[in-house]
Structure formats: structure tokens, C-alpha cells
Image 1: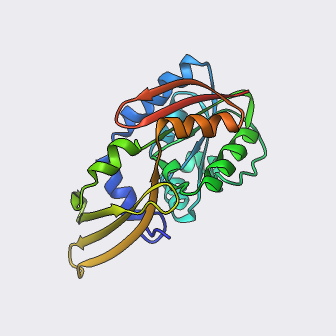
Image 2: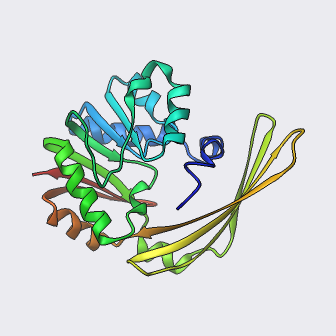
Length: 240
């Protein structure tokens, strides 16, 4: 089980604010949601809430959902005005009191659905959480581009206040339950006046081919409206 969203939740929050352009990501989703006139949304994989203020400011009825309490604690602390908007849950087994116009799965969180059972359960659970005709928007790494070009080692460095973070990534093929790969990361944390920490995290993720995702969606009652092929595969599908 990955430590990235629990033990390393604050590290994630600090690093990913520099790694990701959350404003640009918001405008991407906002464009799609406006195109299809959807206003109440559930963000699955909301993490520490970096997208939430953009949606709230734009007038969306917003709920952010994450599997990890540690991430949600950061989100609630940083956005006390929307504390109740952040809830804990598992996309494979959602139990929410209301339905939504749209569900978006952000941060490539769908790539943690490593088995076919995970994928089927998630798509079925989300279907029940959507209003009639509701939208599902999610992205995935492209298996045919990612896996042949896995980098054996890469890294990022981020400074936040008096703390310097360095991550060393090592990847390798897994292929046990699909187009899966192993990701091992070393987090080097140097805080002024404290001893340097090194924490190792390991996880398995899954990439998909376009045809795989088309079939999974069709099997679970979704009509595919758009497939956006940029750095990732982004599907826009409607519950039928």
C-alpha cells in the first residue's frame, strides 16, 4: 500500500503544488462541464483539495472525495469555508446521500484500479452516483506509450518554505493484472535545523489502452461522448 497519501500526505501537498498546474487543470474540466451544462460535481481523488477553490469560486456545487483521511485533513484545514465539502470514500463502493450531474476522477487516480474487478466495481459504483444522463470524466496513462518508455530513474526537486524535497523515482514492468507497472520512490526531506529524512514508497499502477476503456465503459452502461488524446487519454462518457 502506498504511503504517498497517508504518511507522506503533507509531502504530496507541498510537492504537487509545484509539479501540477492546478489552474490549467481546472480550466480543462471547466470547459467540458460548461459544454455539457453540468453544475453539481463530485471530484474523486480530490487529495489535499488543490482544485476545490477553483470549482467553488466558479459557482459549482462541489464535493471532493478521497480514500485517505490524511489528505482530507489538509483539504479541510486549507479550505475551512468548504470543510463539509470533503468526504472520505472509495470509488469502488460509493455511499453518498445525493447524486451528481458529473463525476470527475482527477490526478490519474483511476490508474490505481489495477484489476478488472476494481475497474468494473468503480464504474458501476459511479454510475449509481450519477443523475440520469450524468457525465463521467476521467483520464488514464496510455499503455502503448507509457510502458515501452518507462524511465528506470527520474526525479523532481521542490522547495517549500524552509523545507527541500527531492524525489527519486524508479519504475519497472509488473504486468500481473493488466498493463501494470511498479513505482518505487525515495523521498528525501531536508528541513532546516532537522535531520534529513528518507522515506521509501512503493505502489503498483495500471495504464490502459483506448479499446480497453471503451469496452469497460460500454459494459457498464456508459455512452462515450468524447475521447481526448493528449498526454493522457481522457474519456467523457454519459450514463445511459
